[in-house]
Length: 510
Image 1 (cartoon, rainbow, N blue to C red):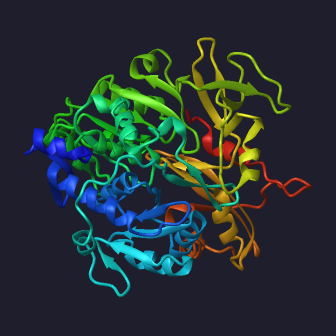
Image 2 (image 1 turned 30 degrees about the vertical axis):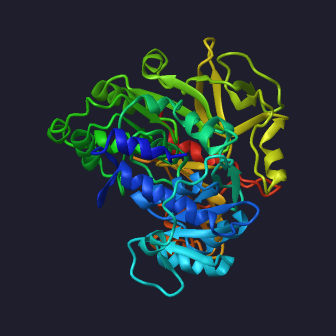
Image 3 (image 1 turned 180 degrees about the horizontal axis):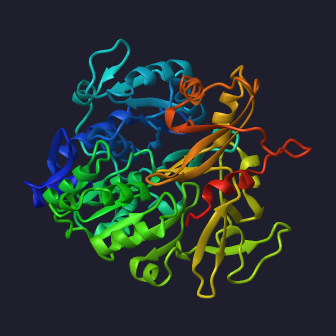
């Protein structure tokens, strides 16, 4: 049975199927490479979990490693390319990864992490030769180009999301975001039903370790051409849309802010009229930013609110958003929204409280290796929270007003303050510390450290504390600013009310 792209290569021989800043591939080449990746991985003993990991920045090979893994029956683990070697090693070991793919930016950390986690096979692209590392092109040359079998069962990605303790927890790509099927053939047919599959070329803007860009990248095996940006740059994004007439993308509010910050004459230079569908995800978008994007690009935006653990729980079109500005939309099956007070009593419409969702399938949030954390996210079976405060209006539209969990969402990335707090508490001049989310024009919010100095008369500088943290933790997880304070308001039980600490910084914010 021919591989999916074989027929596309016949029907559309000159069409560029996959493009990044360094290469362009037609369907025949994509077909050949995916066959080789799938067959090459099937030749390895991937263990009971059939896991491979991709620790690389955006590139065509990043997509091909993930998609070849999918077609070969592997469960692929996208690893945040900002992570340190130690952080990566934990994920490799916890996920039981058998093969690691790396790019030129991550090869050094990847090799160190693989050695620590006992991963024996590391495959690298666009890199100089490294002892013990297999070159991507040489590996492909030795893999069969025959079409792999399509009667094997597809496996979902294993995604890693940090807990409040800062220890990442693996969660399978949820059923709401996985095309499923008992065979790869059925899975490929399911992918064609994706809402993006009705449009033309897809633009991958965000890093492919995030759920949204990862899902968009899978459109390639539904026959949708893809253009991958290595890194987000506002003007380069507009130029790419203009040049390649892309029609769909997944973006976060930070992308919108940076696009809108471009000078008027730069924005006017590029034609974005080809865009027909933009899924906005990652965080709640400021009302003025969303309104400005709709005015500029038209009503092409669909907000998708949810989380990696469960997929999209709420959705709203541009048309509905204009009549319900600020809403993240109505719940979509199998989810329904509930608002509870602090005593777990359910509240009525237009009353603010803790926001929970009920999953009609009973699944809710599942961390396969951490049943205790899975249980902690639920108020009852199938009724879970994403840690936010909000209300539901009389028409069923959900609004987010605050967060009761400590998590900070900065530029679409989840940051858990406990990680930075644990590092900063080790500094000899720090008596106590709490990290909170404060407003940031581009990123939505950023992490700030509130520090009580051990010597109040000679406190450490913010630069010193930030450098100390960055030496020990991925930079994106570190605070961007430090305030020296006299008190954190800890209770007699030692607890800090983060909502109270945040409040002064959010006065006047949406």
